[in-house]
Length: 380
Image (tube, rainbow, N blue to C red; front, side, top):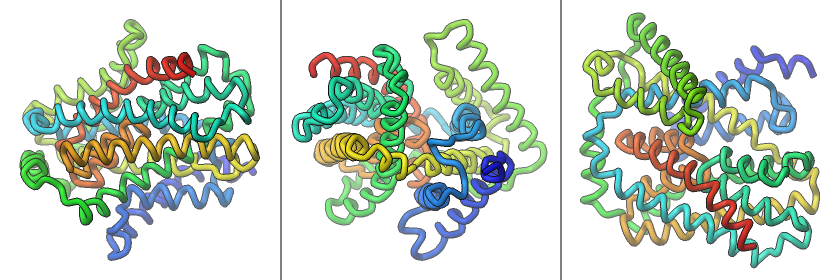
């Protein structure tokens, strides 16, 4: 239907979902879930009701949000980061992320031997296993790197179905990582010294600062310009991910007094993250998985069990080592969902000192994911 594909209409609905999620997140019931989770759920519902486009009939607006809005939101959130605040969180995050990457690989291998998906998927099963290993270590870059090597994208229906399953599982894991710190915090209490110290070193940048015209015009200029510079550098040096350059610019600027005095960068960045999460919700398309029937069910079980096993391993080892459940959830999300969703989690938990480490481990995942993906294809 033309109306539902109209980008202005769709954008207005995405904005409305953010409004509803923020207000719902302030209620007694909604506080248990948080606005980040609610915006995903709300948008997933209306997308599956066909009120807005979903993954199978995606529109350019969604691609633009992924390409422009998500990276710029990271830039704005990094403008609040003081490098001193990550001293304690840096090494634990990297250690946990390496554990999470190993857990992803083990989860895929165990899931393979438990479910034997090759009986339904055939030889494509090994390639899919490698693609999922890559994406649940570092993100879609690794997913597509493995797919392109084997020309898997030419298998249109199965390729699209694998993407649909990946979107569904990733969305479910965002919900899980927003929820399990609350539950585990009651059942297996965290180590107070570590958690208190990391909270103590949070930036003192107030979250409720009202943005003024001067701050707004500078923030918009800086965000767009930084994105352009990062894109330009990538043109000349393709080996450097543009998000890494963009993040570096944000970190450097954040240390200056002028940027520190700008108001509203946190709220602007968080709002853009919510818009990004709304699209994640829209991509959670149940019908696309169902249409594949046996293949779809096999893919969903295979990917779902692999991510579940990843979570169990990360929770057990992370609990034994650190028992900071919010940090463990953020690291796991950096693996499965990527840096942007990990940042959304850090914001949702109020752990601003973990924003930069989430970016760094997300970049590390991009570096590791393709290697682990090909490793899995090779050994299977």
